[in-house]
Image (cartoon, rainbow, N blue to C red; front, side):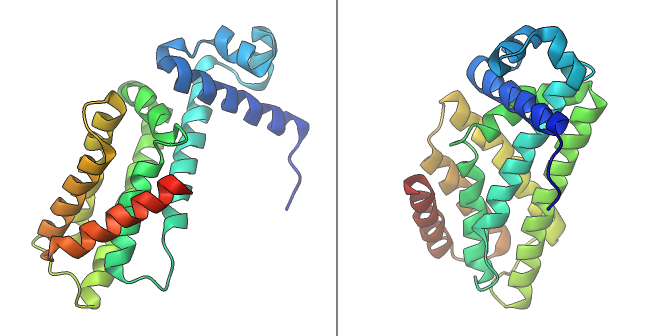
Length: 213
């Protein structure tokens, strides 16, 4: 593995500082001055490594997105059945709340309405999540575990959209993680034509394991 240059290491440190500020103070609090202070640098020194505040926040959001997707990919193994893999991905989606990855993504989501780079990062995240769900659903159909009422791609996109909206409720404090996971599992079971109890048991079991790890 090629060693990172000193400049790239510094860029990563600045992006991490932006993540820390955004998680603590929100997107509005992630000013150039606040990020520089968090990184232990002067504001003009930060701009040597990034051309603008927009570039810094985009790097912070991309790092958060990558961390969230890494959690999802690490949650599944090749020896899992499609039902267990589905439960693992649904549970892992809530795990992003524990290290502020999801909070940072939600803080900056409105920026994607106007910022091309933010929109690209958001689209990449959504497409990757959808692909993961779609692959699991397709495997479940081939294995005779799933009997979907819609095309796999439509179900996958629906699950991603519902996850996005419901986890916002958890972050806002208007719903519990268990409640949201129950809704997601119940929806997935209905769309896939399976009995919900076993899927819900796997989801809650894996969520408990993630919280205890």
